Length: 145
Ligand SMILES: [Zn+2]
Image 1 (cartoon, rainbow, N blue to C red):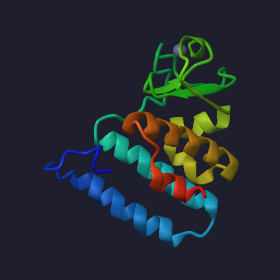
Image 2 (image 1 turned 180 degrees about the horizontal axis):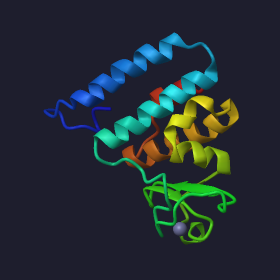
Image 3 (image 1 turned 60 degrees about the vertical axis):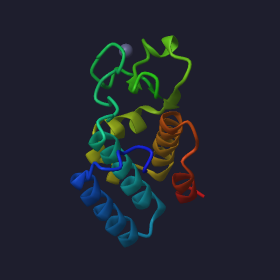
Image 4 (image 1 turned 45 degrees about the vertical axis):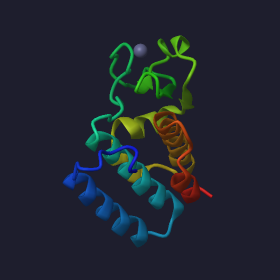
């Protein structure tokens, strides 16, 4: 995390979110609930440091996410979701089932999302952090082992 934040920048909201995350993740035993907390924290982290991904619309053409999308991709290069019409223009991308993309577009749905879809989202997040950090995020991989 130190490589994502400036040393002298206190980020009080990030600290609060991290404390909340630690409390939450320890209060649940199911993998799905833990994954939902991990993903929610990752999204908060990215937003707090000013690089929150675009998830309510296509990051390339701004088409609003909706049911006419049959699938979606997450791309670090595009900095968010890609609609079916744009994904061909990007090589670096992770395919998401439509319900996984829906949960990302409305993060309050994460707690009601299945473990299989949450794993798909977390894989996209790990991919994203790997792209951002130029190396794998070891801690996050440990959570999925
Ligand atoms: Zn698009």
